[in-house]
Image (cartoon, rainbow, N blue to C red; front, side, top):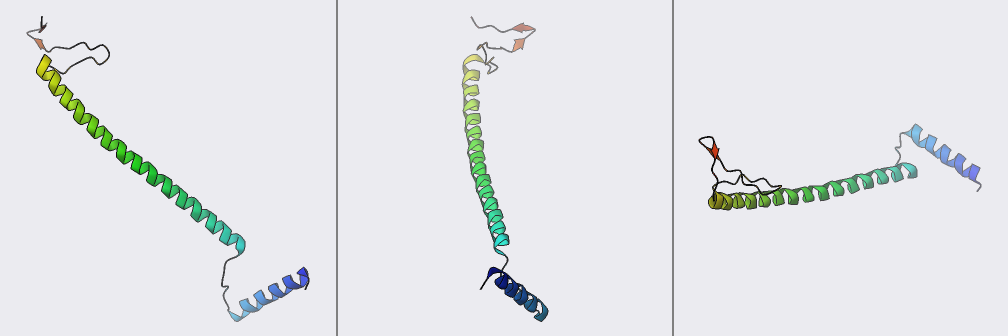
Length: 106
């Protein structure tokens, strides 16, 4: 059979199905490919979001650990120097003022 005859038969059978109320069994090949492409994009995006969320979760835990370590260090500094108010750029200890004067240790 030639292509035109096949197209005509397909077109005719499609019309007959429409008139008799028969519903199509499948979507077109192009529609199926588009659906598959969209679902694949969605799945890849969801996987990527999952990876980012796991990384975020790990970073939040690391922040908590570092905060705990900083709190311990502040306690050590308070015990040794009477304050944990330290300039983190140059290490200068900012002692609390008592009676308007800085309390300097000699």
